[in-house]
Length: 457
Image (cartoon, rainbow, N blue to C red; front, side):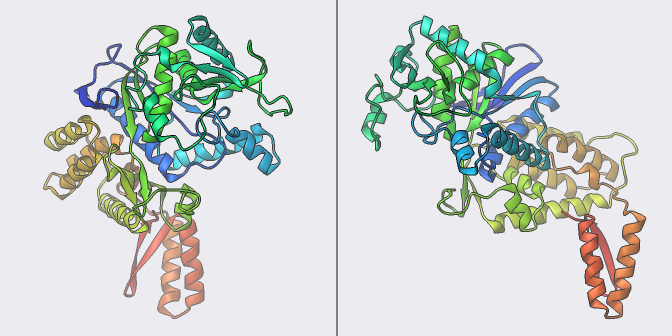
């Protein structure tokens, strides 16, 4: 039995799917106006672990991740510039050029972290018809009102508003530091459809019953989830910074359909940087490219993510990442000495312990501890590696490619030539061959007059 902490009920619950043997799952993806940073990818790796866990438990998973390419305004609410439009102006490109570029970069990083692709990535701009239809349905049911800049959802009409996020109208009034739109009936009301400025031509705008404009940020997820997964879905994931966004999804979806929108809400905690907040002003919004530029393998970052429970804030430091890379390197070095699998045999006690902690709200720190206990045990080599590879179906650390690693002959020859140069003090040529080996994905560890070749991580 899989147990999940439900952000809505604030307790751990037994997972019971809507349809036996099948899971419908939705994760809020990136707004594609810039590079996704390592805080974003903590959420996507957490979602990947959850996805993998369902698969290992023999569920069929209908999994969707959205790509926000319109409608996300610069203050994350209903004011400011559209983030994509703003970047298009700054770079002198079209909105489509911007979103295509950053989607491509996102998917490259996504694969480097060995995150399994969902059934479908959905782009907001490809579901305009569904979003307009959803707003129209809410209008017909009396949940909307119009202002000079668009169509808004009236949160006072939804009795359960605030249950997920814990933010109610009175809280926002008391804590407001910005001027609240005077045309809003309630501080918590949010835009469903925004009208284009009359004196400005946007890259992305569409005809609608309310005038030329574009969808609000929140409506896209509801429209895409309802279209692809149905009126009620099993699991909805995202970062804890999206609680208000998800609260709005609940309101508009349930008011449009009259049914519960999501059974299990899940939220990954923030990634801190050196104990503080990640922000552009502090120049610490690191990307995967930044990680690689400092010599770290992307899977070292994945291992680092696994070292903390997804609901617990995780503190990133370069020292912590180095520790993760050292642990991963040690893991690879151990399995390099194992023979490839000859027969399938499992250490059932270790595998059972592993799945127990994974199925108990996805406790990855304990899962890693169980994996290391297995490696230190006196279980036979074949049983050990079979069990380890089964565990890696959840961990996603690419262990299999390191088992019984055979070094290509050309790499061995390069390493031997380099060692000859080194023994004879021809350091420039030795260094040149070292760089050539590293470019090919291998490291040479010098040991006196001898050496050891390892795959680079």
